[in-house]
Image (cartoon, rainbow, N blue to C red; front, top):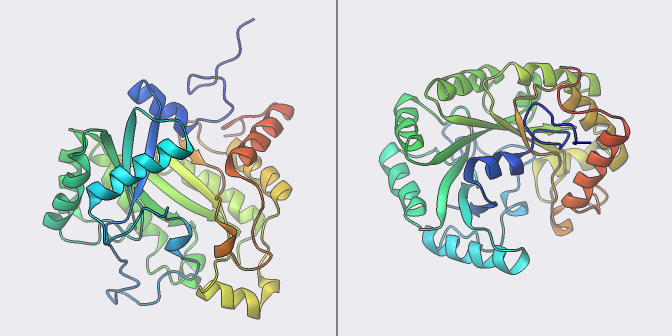
Length: 315
């Protein structure tokens, strides 16, 4: 008897990023994180200083990501890094990850991105940025670029609630996120998003309600992270001073939560990641999980199978 296929065309119980790229390219694709030396408008004084309270870019930048190295060098070292740790991919996506990667004039952006796309093994780019670091001229350029290569603009959403964004020193409102996604999608560009669960002041019901909000946005893909407290951040001090204001997820609790959330999520949205994995040396004491991401994903999928549930079941 053939296995049941879900609306996204395979037997996995969620619309997975891995499957999305395999269908698009016909083979395994590996993302290569890059650091092109960008900053953020709430760091450089454009709108604020200090950055987001939770942010520590070093925590998720691989060792080869060094803004002092040319882009091509980072790509070559990234390919070697992934070839050593994992099986070699046939194609790569350049992921401009660190800080806000549209926070420069268009002419500088063209020079930076062209360096990556000139590499013979790079088949596309993912650009991580903020909704307040985009404008019509940049989007028109990206629209032209997306006709020539695979292009994803990944917006840091973090929360759908303005009260939370303000408390994080985020520097923009949720309405700007909605507008950025709409303007990006209008030009036929793939839109991605990133959201954090467990931020101070948000109840689990409020977080679950975000499934309906996100489902109505112009989002093609989404990445979920549980809140982690990084050493040296403003949030670490807030956590140290008032730990009772934080309700950090434990693994089993998060699995139950994320499955409930996924059940409510539009099945057309591709899920890139359910949780974050960070080297323990970056985490404040007692705030991390000792579980590898691939193991955690297996736990989520096993629980979904036991519950006979899937993405969008309650959408």
